[in-house]
Image 1 (cartoon, rainbow, N blue to C red):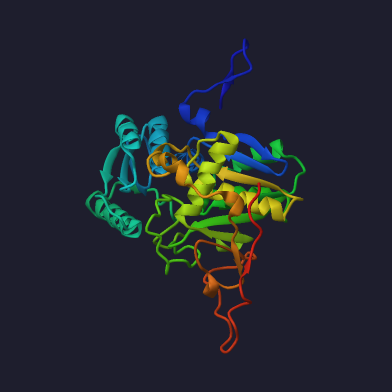
Image 2 (cartoon, rainbow, N blue to C red; image 1 turned 90 degrees about the horizontal axis):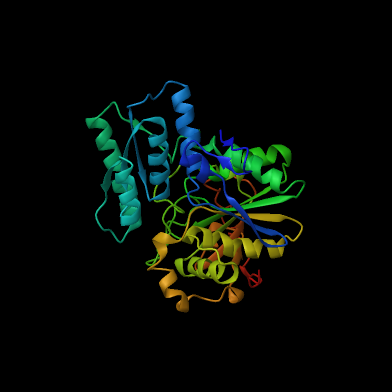
Length: 364
């Protein structure tokens, strides 16, 4: 816990993870608020490792291993530094030299996958590499950020901050799905106070988590937002609405967030911002909390340097679908209604759903 210097109102933190874990809340419009993180997954890593240490499952000197596309790797390495644990990261090909250098300085061992255009293959290779390490080093502890619900625990603290900052407001949380831990860990405590709180998930085309794996987006570099394998931490029954976006639409939201609000954030944040603007227009009675997982540093060349090519969000809108059978790029939206997955097929001889209708262009 931070202490306070009597000469200032600023907290004094005993470790950098305490300083970085909480978001900055930025009001973007009357009913749109951004929770901006430097590294969202510090909450996940802190909550998980603290629980494992307290239970005696891991002890100082033990090695924690996991696969990551970037921000979880850095968060886990920082938390291992805090608790005197060793860290081994099997890193995606998308992990930048900046992040890798930080990991190595923190003492983490880094296995980085070779350059690979197909991020689905990259993810499969990373999991296979973790399993190989565990066979060779059975004393390692696999964190299983994709599957172990212990990663949800730390987000209860964030939920308390959100309710304190937005008291009494009916909420909708808009977040990239990713591993599912942040969505589940955040919406659970919020719904204890308000069961009607909405959860809106954002997915890239090509992700298996909500059934878009039959699509391929050749430009997709939205590391951490989608999945090539099923994630147990994705609790489909928590989601009220799901949106699927292509890279070009996520890029439009990312550049617009910087242009309109001077917020330099990652591609998953930009995708959530674009969706948040549309949802806020459809549900003006709710405050929409957009979860911004990280900064934009690893997207400088492929997103921000191309800002002149970014689409204008004012002209973009999703096609609203009633069935996954009518899912189509570049942007689809579906009322998920807190159902499980996979969804049942429509009865034989029955249409999969009404014809898709165009939505309202984003103006937020």
